[in-house]
Each structure stands twice: as structure tokens, then as C-alpha cells.
Image (tube, rainbow, N blue to C red; front, side, top):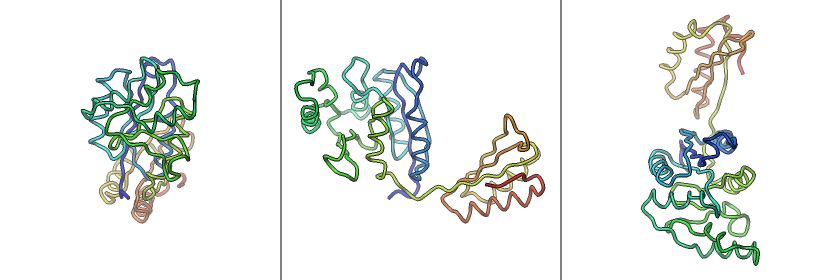
Length: 246
């Protein structure tokens, strides 16, 4: 198990960039990965262009532990993700016999020849069923550390849920402190806290409609002791400026 796994999401589709469709999958993965203890480092949106997808896959595959793609998997002209992932790693595409058999078994005579394009995957790919094993769910195509997922939100979620436990790591703990005073007034104390607790990720977020709270300060860490120490350290320095702690 990785002790501090990282991930990136690549959302693929002209429909996302044009605003015709709202992305739901990256937003979903933000919460899922956080709950699994995986740090999300990047979300990138790219068009249905093989070179753009391949370049992004290649870059992010070398930068994080897990890459998840969303979209571009299907039988139509703009479904080029599998081709692009193959190009990213200089692999040919080839008909996967196991995937073809699954498709024929599910759709039978209703299967169109063009649908079998979805069984043409990078030659170095594997099929991952998750903890349930073959027969438990439809497999995810995986190439190295790249997990190729569909763009339809309902299908995307079902396929991720089948393999989600494969990514579970040590939890990321989180706390929050709310300040009654503006960010400029607490900046010095924030700097001291960050310097004193390098294992804690401290975020400062002014509230757009503050009411009694001017700033929300968040604390995230895999080290719970360090996190609680950082929170107490800042709270002591802010004194009466602390509105509440969560």
C-alpha cells in the first residue's frame, strides 16, 4: 500500500469545453479520493484530440500514482481515448479477446460490429475487476497507472465503485477554524503555524458572505497529532478572534 498516494483526473470531451455538458465525474472523484486517503493533485480538461489526450496522459502518468480518465470511450468517431492512451505509451491497439467475449455475451445479436471498437485497447492493457474478481462487474481497462473510465456519470460511478477499494490508503484527517477577523490580521499567525507544522496542509479562505466568520482556515494531514497540534497552535495565537472550531 502506498503511504501517500497521489492522483490526477483527465476529463475528456469537446462537450465539456463547450459547456454543452456539465462535468460531474471529476467532482465526484474529488470526494471519493479524499475519503480513500488519496491526494488529488490535478484535474485537466482536454478535447477529443488524440495528441492532446496522449500528451496529457503521458505527463500526468509520470507525475502521480494514479490517473483516471473520464470520457471518450465508445463506438463513435469522437471516442478516441483508448487510441490516445496507447499513443501516450507508444503501444499499438489490439482486440482484447476477453473484452470481446464479454461484449458478445452481454449483447448477443444486438451487438454491432462498430461496437467492438470498445474492445480495441492498448496492447499493454489489463482488465481490472476489483476485489470481486471476474464476473462480479464490468472490468476497467488499465494501462500502467492509467484507469480508463467512461464519461456517462452513472456508468462512471458504477465502474469506479467496483475498484475503489484498490486505492484505499491511510486516511487524511481534516479540521477547520473560523476567524472573526480578516485574513490580513491573521496572516502572521498563519505563517508561524505553517512553519511550525510542516506535515500539516493549512488553507486560508476568506468568506464571500462572511456574517460572523471572516475567514475559514482548514487543516489537513495524515498525522492526526500534528494536525491537532497545528490547530491548537493557531487558536492560541488568535485568541478571541476564533469564532468556532470544527
